[in-house]
Amino acid sequence: MPSASPAPQRNARSHRRGANRRETDWQLVKRLVPYAKQNGRLLTTSLLLLVPVAIAGAVQPVILGLATSLLLGQVCPEPSPGNPTPSCGFFENFLAQQGSMTAGLNLLAIALLGTILLRLAFRGWQGYLVQEVGQRITAAIRADLFEHVTSLSVRFFDRTPVGRLITRLTSDVESLGDVFSTGAIGIVSDLFALLTLVVIMFLRQWQLGLLLTVLLLPVTALIVFFQQRYRKANYKSREELSKLNSMLQENVMGINVVQLFRRERYNSEVFRATNQRYIKEVDKTIFHDSAISATLEWISFTAIAVILYFGALLVLRGPIGVGQLVEFILFAQKLFDPLRQLAEKFTAIQSGLTAVERISDLLNEPIEIEDRAGDLAVLAKSTRTEQRGSIRFDNVWFGYKPDEFVLTGLDFEIKPGEKIALVGPTGAGKSSIIRLLCRLYEPSKGRILIDGVDIRDLPQQELRRHIGVILQDGFLFAGDVKSNIALGESYPFEQIQAAAEQTNVAPFIEQLPQGYDTELRQRGANLSGGQKQLLAFARVAVRDPEILVLDEATSNLDVGTEADIQVALETLLEQRTAIIIAHRLSTIRNVDRILVLKQGKLVESGSHQALLEEDGLYAGLYKLQLLGAA
Image 1 (cartoon, rainbow, N blue to C red):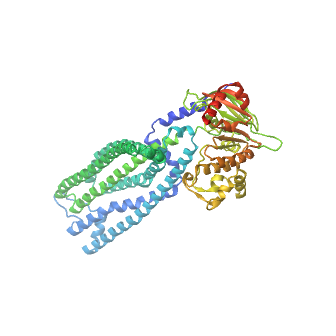
Image 2 (image 1 turned 180 degrees about the horizontal axis):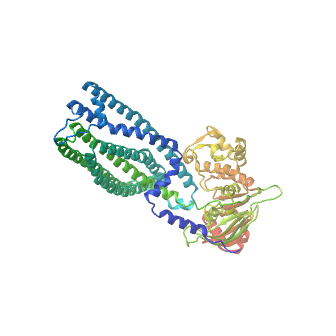
Image 3 (image 1 turned 135 degrees about the horizontal axis):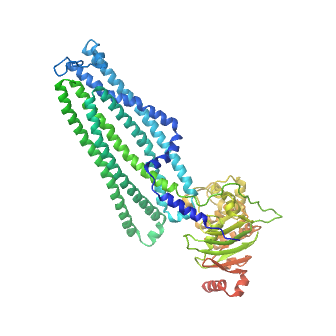
C-alpha cells in the first residue's frame, strides 16, 4: 500500500501561518458582527434612545443662554449702527410673546427640568441595555472560545502554557465585552452628541460654531496618535499578564516540588521579575491614557478662552448678545465632554481590540483532528458469534515536530481478541502508539485501521466508543462518584453499579461517606492515587469497548488492591482486543504477543518465552529487571 502523504500537518502549518498574520482593526471588528446580530433588537433600541438624549443635551446651553438674554432684556436686540437689522430667532420671538420676564423664566425652567429628566431616564435605560448586550456577547464568545479550545489537538496544548489560555478565556474576554458595553455603543452615542451640538451651534451662530468645529481637528489628531501608542503598550502588557498567569499556574500545580526542593525564594524572585515587567508595560498604558486626558483639559480651556475673545468682539459689534456668548461658552464645555468620553471609550476600544486580536489568534488556531466531510463509517459491535476489534498499523510514521520522527515505518496487525504488550526503553514510542490509535494526533505518514476501516474515516465519537483507555494517572473532575464514571453519558445507575461490581471497585465506593453520591474535590483531591485509578477501571467497564488500552494502569495500586484488580481485569479482558504497556515485564508474561520497540521501530515480536529464547532486547530488559528485583 502506498503511504499516505502528511497532508494534515501541512494544512495545519499553513493555517497557523495564516493565523499569525496580523489582522486590521476592521477585520477584528467584523469578527464581532455575528455576535452583535444575535442581540439586534436590544442594540437597535439602545441606538434609537441616543436621539432624544443627544437633543436634550444640546438644547440645554440654548435654554441657559436664553435665560441670560431674558434677564438682561436682550431677547430681541434693538437696532444698532453695527447691527442695523438684528435677527430674532424662533425661541427669542416665542419668549418675547410671553408678556413678562417671570413667565418666560418659568417656561425656561420647566424646559430645562424636562431635558434633565429626559436625559436621566433615557440614559439610564440605554446604559442598562448596552451593558446587557455586552454581557450577552461576552458570554457567547467565552462559550465559543471554550468549545474551540477543547476541540484543539493535544499538539496545541503541548506547546501552549495553561495560564496563557486562562488569561484569554477570562481577562481578554472581559475586555472584549467592554468593546460593546462601554466602547462601540458609547462612541456612537458621543459622536451623535457631537454632531447634534455642531448642527445646533451652526443654527444659532455660524461664526462661533465654525470656530469651535475647527478646534476639534487638532484634538482628533492627538487622540488618534495617543491611542495608537496605547494599543501597542496594551498588547505588550497583556502578553506579560499571560506569562504571569502561566508562572502562577505552574507554581500552584507544582507546589509539592517547589516545597520539597526549597525553591520558594528562587521562584518568588523569578515571579517578582515577571511581575515588574508587567507593571512596566501597564505604566506605559497609563501614561498614554493620562496624556489624552491632560491634552483634552488643556485644549478645552483654550477653546473657552478663544470663544470668550472672539465672542466678546461680536458682542461689542452687535451681531450677538451676551446670552448667545454664554450659550457658546457652554457649548465649548459640552463639546469637550463627549470628546473626553470618546477618549476614554477609545481606550476601552483599543484594549478590547487587543483582546479581540489575541482571541482571534486562538480562534484561528486550526482544529487538526476533525471528522471528514461526507458519509463516515460506523463500526459494528462485537457479538457472541463474531469477535471484532482488529488493529492494523500500515507503515505509520509520526513525529511531534516536523521531520523529527519518533515512530518510523511501523507495520503490524493485532487480531480481534488478541492481547498485545508494548515493551521498550523509555522514549521508544509506546505512548505515541496509543495516542495515534486514539487519534489524539494524526500520523505523518501511513494509516491506522480498526476492523479494516481507516480511523480518519470514523467519527471521533464512534472511535472513542470502541476504545477504552486506562492511563497511569486517572483524572477526576469535581462532582460526585457516579458522574465521574459516566462522564456526561446518560447511563442508568444500575449500569454504573454493575460496572463497578464487575471491576471489584464497588466495595471501595460503598465505603465512601455517601457512596456513589460522594462529592469529589477538584482532581479528586479527597481520594488516594490508587482510589482514583479504581474509578478509571469502572469508567471503562461501563462503556463496554471492543478494544482496551492499559498504560501502566496498575502501577499506582498497592499489592492488595492490585490483586483485586487483576481478578477484575481477567473478566474485563475477555472477548476484547487489548494493548498493554507495562514496565514491569513480569506482569505481561501471559499475553498472546509482545511487541518490542526501540527508537520508534518494531525490532522484536513474539511470546514471552519465544523472546527469551531469542536472547535479544526483550531478554536483556527482562534479565535487568530480575537483577534489580533480586
